[in-house]
Image 1 (cartoon, rainbow, N blue to C red):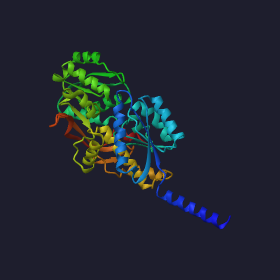
Image 2: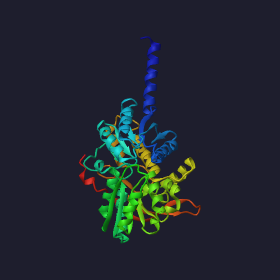
Image 3: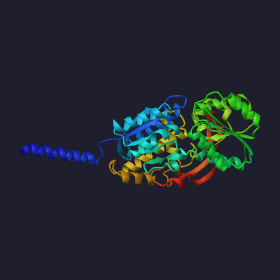
Image 4: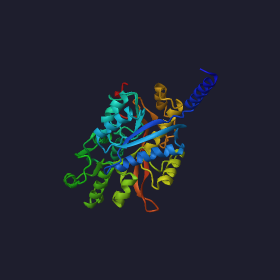
Length: 390
């Protein structure tokens, strides 16, 4: 090899080493989420919150360049599995996120985390993945499915409602919802109905409900399901007679815009609210409104926190995903400014956090939103953490 070739090769090696040291190669993040069906806005908000965090970092998370690849699962478990396989095998993605629905999560996540790929959930938190099915590569930055329902069960008991009717969809998150509510509710169950996932007509359920004469109704119907139910509940005149309670999923800002006055006064459980008074949340809400022209939902807040969590771990390993153990430990530390304020991971990599009840109001500008009424739980740990032996 002549002198000129040696010099050229040496310069190339130096340049490659320097580029690698500064993390010039983007870390690929695959987002599988629901962007179609009547629940499509849930995935949109998760995606938009995540993208906002990347934009604020000028295309980086934790000062590391990232490439976000997004695909729609159509709320179908089989499609979610196909996308995950493609992301991992073809695109060489090492971090996955984005799933909205627990049936999709159960189809996708167990195989993903066993393949040495990290999954950070910005929403779905099925009990099986929090307990016996937990895994060291699975982190949930939102909540365990039962948690928000538990807070409302506690609150409804405090307010001395003694005969509550329960409605939720027949899928893992719906069953977790009712389980969570009943864990803290101490009164009588007037009735318990599981609807079809994606159902739009609730005439028969409302008829059965009226016949039971409950003193309150607790329901969990996310996305378009909740819009239809709340409208039909009001059209039947029930909102004037029987108080309605639910989780934040059924009273996010997008739903409130669609249902309007029918939801005013309803109490719902949440780990986040746009009026939470901490610097990170104020910055997030203002930036989201400026960027997208709407108030963020809890889904958007979870997407945003998910991105910041990933960024904190990428920063800790300098963007080197070969340092899997160090990346995992950095995720576990949750060293980022959560929009919720108080935030940490428990033994099963699910949040230990405060949970509130909020009331739906109409603000001074005539817009429908939520305001915090009370903190129900402080540093709440989910019921399944003790079953996790990862």
